[in-house]
Amino acid sequence: MSSVVTDSPMGVDEQALIDLVRRYPRLCVLTGAGVSTDSGIPDYRDERGEWKRPPPMTHQVYMKSHLGRQRYWARSLVGFRLLANASPGRAHHTLAELEAQGFIEGIITQNVDRLHQKAGSQRVVDLHGRADLVRCMQCNLLVRRHVLHDHLATLNPDWVGMEAEIAPDGDAYLDDVDFSDFRLPDCPRCGHGILKPDVVFFGDNVPRWRLERAMSMLDDSQALLVVGSSLMVFSGFRFARHAASKGLPIACINRGHTRADALYALKCEAPIDESLTALLAGLSDAQGRPSID
Image (tube, rainbow, N blue to C red; front, side, top):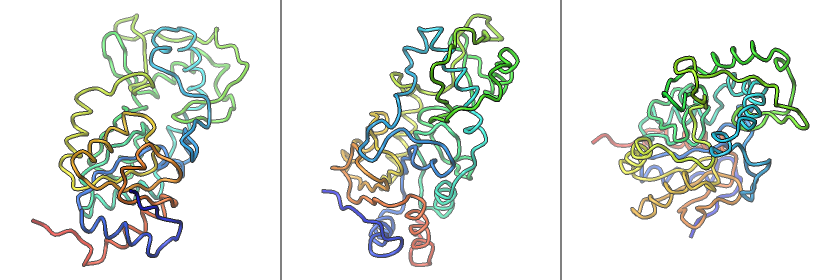
């Protein structure tokens, strides 16, 4: 049975989380979109775990539909600048400091924004890939996304500077727009491969080597801390299920329903940045530091 922690900024609720981490000081941290909302990047789901917006592009549609790819890249040309220019928030910096103090074995992030790395975290598995890279699906050429965007802007000058509401992961909402004239480049190396962001779209699978690295990180830890994720997608939920099967305690900082609610030893339904800041403050005193074996 989970223990739900309420919204007091620094008190008995945060003390329960501090005590848990003092007892299990090598954390594996699993993060989701809620960690990056303070950086201006929208999340996908509401507090009930339901979609806030239409579901994002799927791998199958992207690979099979030229019009689907035109729609994706036209919207990305408008919306990706927010993701590209985002700065780490307080939660990212606090997690980096917790790692520096020895409390975090590593971070498994479902986000593709690289903000954990920008904040200084060293041991990060980008479970769903990196949005700043683009891969040719034929010859595996990797190119920086900003290079492709510069080329797209040259091919489609009328789309540059267009304003729209920004969606998660660098998308933008463009309704009643004709995308059929949006020009897409071919792979600069093989000449015919489909260029796709180097991320795991919905309906695709996490590469085995990356999954194994993330599972190894969890196996080397003493507890799992879920931060800012509803775990509705199986690729994230599986880590909570794996931790539970090994008898590892699981704590969560997230507002609202998650798929793993029944598995938590402790759940904090409180603001992420405040909860992590309180955790860091409580652990940073001499008594709270982990022992070095």
